[in-house]
Every structure is written in structure tokens, then in C-alpha cells.
Length: 314
Ligand code: GLU
Image 1 (tube, protein in one colour):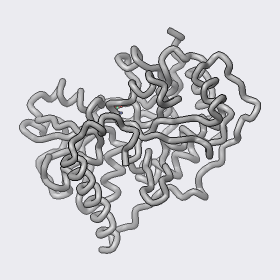
Image 2 (tube, helix red, strand yellow):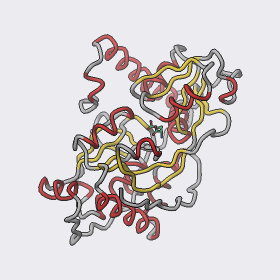
Image 3 (cartoon, helix red, strand yellow):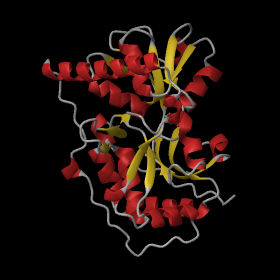
Image 4 (tube, helix red, strand yellow):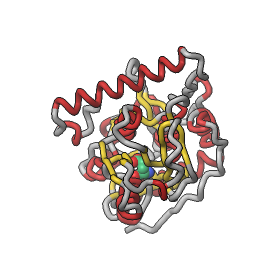
């Protein structure tokens, strides 16, 4: 299921089975809730998604990543596969959908590659830098916070959205309303993520629990193994929308998570081309259309896109 996530290969069989069972339980729960009359889970409708104009004459000879993709004939883009409204893989069709996926498609069209030809590769939070450094992916679009530490390892185009860290708890929970209530509580997040680091650094009395993905954290929350899941509000709202009778997002966001498109460090030509492409798609309305058809379905109206930070080459 997560063939390309190198970390998972190291996992023991028991843990893999447990994770698969838990994911299946979440899927069943979602179906069951649907049957019981809760509102149907809305997903991106393909006919509402914008069609991005492919820039067929586009050339970027200064970018080694672009040249390699040109020789190959298509782009390989790293994404998430278990984040509703952002990056989600349909297990039946194998198709990816969500706001991050749309951003990846817009960028592909601007770089001269038909978005239909993109090969998406699921890469977990902890493996993003390595995947970019090893050339396993050309760029990465998956709730990837831009920060100075990561900028030492990779480059970032964008930001294209600003999220904020928040908390997901069971719907019946009345104890947790914000990070100040986490003392002694088990809080789950993804390895290698900024929300996990923030909990460990700023809320040391919370008991941090790390897994590869947030969906495993959500399964642990539903099966009472942990008390809360913490990551970006965008991601948590998607899980809550899947099972609104079981889960809720609480409190106010307590960080700023500017989402960038990760590129191999030093490929400034690619980074600047993606910055230009973002600005163009924000101007021509694609960004908003894509948002409305994906992340907007979780109930938050489209904010104005944040200004692109075209930081100097280096
Ligand atoms: N935006 C945060 C990060 O990049 C959390 C989401 C994620 O792990 O992708 O670490």
C-alpha cells in the first residue's frame, strides 16, 4: 500500500497488519456512519476541478530536475495518500485527489508536462527530504511546512497556503480544549513533522506518540490508544469530516504552517519557475477553483493565497 515509503519497509509484520486492520476499521466506520444517516462525505468532484493549460513550449534547461523529467517524459511527484481533501488515494482506482494534488497538477502544466502523465509517489513526512535529495521525486506537494531547518536540506517554492497546528479528539471528550490541557495525555503525531517537534519542545508534560502517518494516529484515537492527534488544522478537519459523530477538532490553531512545494536543494531554476507558476495560477483563478473543489469542502471558505516568498538562490 505504501510501497514507496522506505521507512515502512522496516516495519515488523505485526505492526503492518495492525495498521492495515486499523485503517480498515476507519473505512468501515466511515461507511457505517454514512448508513446511519450522517451527511455523506463529500469528495472532490472531477467535473468541478479546473483543467490546467499545458505550456507546451516551456523550457527550463538550467534545471537538472526538469531536464531529467523531460528525458523521462513525465514528472514524478511526492505526495500524501491518507489526508482527506489534501492528498488522498482512492484504494479502488489508485487515483489521487485533493488540494495538494491540484497544486501538483497546476505546476506540472506550467512546466510543460500534461498533468495526466504525473506519477504520484506516496512519501511520509519523515522521508520527504531524503526522497528529494536522492532524486526519487522531482518535487513534493504534501502539507509540507517551510522552515529554516528544512531549507538547509531542500528548497521551497511558495507558500501556497498557511495552515496552523491544532488538536483532534474524540467527540465525547470534554477534557482537552487546547495544548494547555495535554499534561499527562497521550498525543499522537507523525514522525518528522513540525507539530510533533512543537509538542515535544513546548509541551514536555504531554506524552508524545509518533507514527509514520496521521491516519494511524486517528485509528489509535478511535481505539482509545491515544487521547489526541495533533497536526495541521487542514488535515485534522478532513478526518473529523469523515466521522463527525466520533471526532472533533478543538481549540484555536497554535502555530503557523506555511505550505511549500519541496524541490531538490540548489535547483533554483525549478524553484523560481514554480514560484512564477503559483503566482500565475493564483491570478488566473485556478488556485481558488482548485481550493473550492477540494479543501474548501471541509467548510472553510478560500482565504486569499499568501504572498510567494521568492528567497534568494543559495
Ligand atoms: N505541516 C507539517 C509538517 O510539514 C505537518 C503536516 C505533515 O507532516 O505533512 O511537518
